[in-house]
Amino acid sequence: MKIERIEDINLLYQYPENDRFQYAGGICTNRLTTLILVHTDTNHVGIGSVYSHPSLIHLIIRDQLNPLLIGEDPRNVEELWKKMYGLTLWYGRKGVAMSTLGGVDTALWDLRGKSVEKPVWELLGGERKTCPAYASGLLWKEVEKLAEEAGQYIEKGFRRVKMRLARSEEYDTSAILAVRKAIGMDHDVIVDASMRYHFELACRMGDFLKEQKVFWYEEPFAPEDIDSYTALRQVVRVPIAGGENEFGLQGFREMIRAKALDIVQPDASRCGGISEAWKIAKMAEESGLGVATHSWNDAVAIIANAHMVSAAPNGITVEVDQMNNPFVNELLVEPLQIEDGELQLSHAPGLGIQLDLEVIDKFRMGDPLTIPDGVYSDMTFGKSYFPEPIGYEER
Image 1 (cartoon, helix red, strand yellow):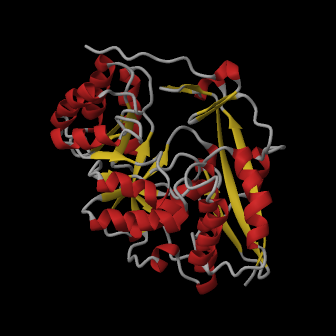
Image 2: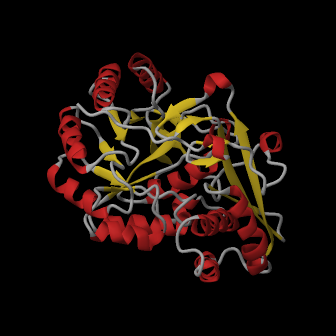
């Protein structure tokens, strides 16, 4: 089996006015993601995905990774990861370069599984074909509507929900109380502070989150503020989670060594692929920490993360975006299935998924180097959309 070419496909979706949602970065108008297809001379195609700047992904694939990997055996996953990392090292190590080579890496794992007719979770040593999953939504809206939304997720089969805070102290506490009441104590509430707390506020909120039996307390600070994470973990009694904005084993090593987290959150579509996410999970396990992957772009990333979490002894759960994202809901021929809080995988080889080509054609970007202006949840394009700083009112 030899690699013939690597293809990147950038997808873009514009929300109708009624489906747009507000969060700390403004009002989300669009979503995007990048699929990576590794074509081989055996007609097998490996599938991966990347969540980063689509134009930069395209250039890295076209001008560097594609020429590097043509003619290589895709089953040599670890060797090819090192080659890609070495080639992009000078301008990479973190950010878009690491995410891009990770998308290729995930596609290589898919091919490795297809070549031996085994699912990735089994290749990683796992024994179960399901993965705990949680509903990720509950952004900034009226408290009553948050409660209703949380209840709907439980009805859909989820047993955990995640909500976004950091609007104001009064809102944050009221919203948590409403969601907790809506889903009851038998289900878990996860909170995400969107990197908008200072230390004293984070401590104060931590006491309240403990009272409400919050499952974990995510990203109160920016990822580089490791000292604040470490200090907070020493004084609050809620598990501290973070890592969606970190890259590579070296980045997570810093946070783990600093004893900054209880739960690490790599994302195969951002941190360096399944290979790197797996190394991060193993490092976390050695330090007695859990792993719960981030996913906020497409169903391919969710499935890739789920294979890893399912196989990891310290795997806790995988994130499933609930914000009417067609790249999550429509991209796969067999849609994601949640039953009693578990994402269903399978014994099918590789990632065990098939892309819906009509959906890809519908949302494919015409020119990957030209991105329409808008707010894309985690990325913003066009000066008129750059967010104004949003203050936080404390009590």
